Image (cartoon, rainbow, N blue to C red; front, side, top):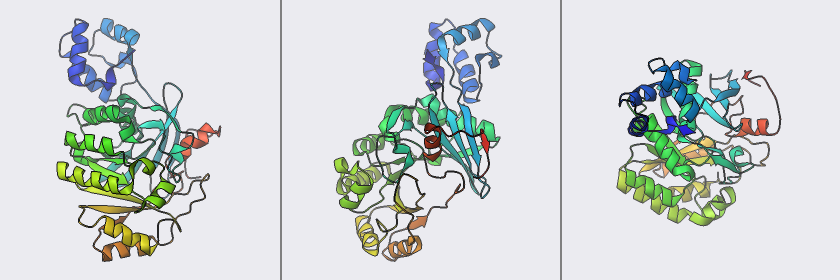
Length: 349
């Protein structure tokens, strides 16, 4: 089946030309798809014969709400979408003064093995298509009835491990005749796949790159993030410097604060030395507890922040949202995988 929603307008033009249709059909269908239609019958400005052919030959992805959790603390909404093959992925809508941000997944599961993350439990099942990533933006906006102005690719999966499809998603979501979210309003998070970071740099996209660092030394980082065995902190930082030199875009370094593991004064000092002269800032993240992990949230977040800043490193503490609705990425999907059943609509639990 042909996946029309993963196509650019130019590819749609070529497709409809093969069908003997006029060029303008491409943009008609593109706008319908990006508007969140759930059937080809909704495309009322297309001839019925064409709609029938599209039904026979084309795939129309429409995720279903398996679970919707609404935080009673801050209005954050966590969606668990069931995909056409039965797999589930998570999306989170976060409300800020500057607008609504949606956090999207790029894979079903994850192979990176970070010990503090529920997304990686069970490994990676498959990559999401560009359409399935785009659907998370379109149908979240459609369900909540509010405009989404920012995207963070920090949900389930490693975006740069699904490079080509993620790049296609970025092209589609940025299109002025579609969702039309500018690159400067998109942040992509990676655990540090250096070859893909270099590849991304060469594209010159104006998005924000967020690097999940989480430790300033190889011993601690490898303990937390097995991917570090193949990368290493020094190589990762060299790659980040090249990224800035190539793109001129500052990098955000994510640092999950874990009690007794990476939150000591010595580690703050090492982190400050590591980032010396490096444009960017550190985003300190209060750890969300995962039932399967023995790791606990740090009690020294503010002290760590102050020590970094006293050494010339800009550090912010991420606002914790959705603490009452399985805030940690992958937790809700994990509950479903283990056979727990609830109604689709939930408040805080």
